[in-house]
Length: 380
Image (cartoon, rainbow, N blue to C red; front, side):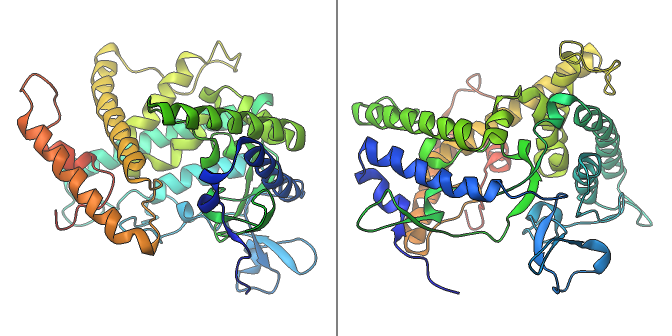
């Protein structure tokens, strides 16, 4: 294995002018075009044909390669604190020959996260909680299968290979000319997914600033131009990804959250089912919607839960922006000590603010703050 040539793009980005940034984006997307143009017969991940994968889980490709189980962490028991139980479903990591099978994999993946409750004395509240997730995912399976059969989804469901984390830390450019892409790294979770799986992904060089200072306004203008350049490259070079980004997001969000009910809480996926149910007729989908709308009383209770989730999500985004870290909390080794200290300071500041708030200001207390906090609080 060779070392990546050049320097990481994030080290050069701030010193590049607008023309250089746009040229660099075009170079990046030219590389992506070559990847996404490859035709695949199914969804999954690429393996060596002679690799240690059961023959029943492999589809032959060519030049010594095969298509096998999806290698993304969402399908495997390899995330800290995220066990797989398979008490409510059999393992289903692919490969999947069609979109219907792929959708079943998403739901089965969600079911695999649910704890087993068949001990001699199972906790009744846990049994009820798991049962509610099973019911919700049952509705979810019917909903996303109905959506998957719709022609609008079918047109953006082509099996597509794409870099899983197309951000500046994974892109290397020439030291002499930062508009020349020399390498891309971090391919280990690369998989073949429906094109719509990438619809909501935007590289960090297209993210708009929410700050209002003079310098930040210049940065925001630069980011707007970069986003326009990125969208133009998609439309001109990779129309299937551009088409996926043009689909109404209410069509796609049920696919995005159905496998995360145990991790994020059922409230998020339930909201997506409510939204699609309300728009089912508007979207001209075959009636009736498989998910029946909750009663007014149930909707009121759900809305309160969803507001708490939104506060948690907003808090996470603010912390990520302040610390300048991605959602998974990845930090370069050379920045670890400084980021760790900043994280501790931010948390202590939030705790102080919560303790000093007026009782009527907000319903977030210290216990809820700890539950909402997106990163590890060990030792705090």
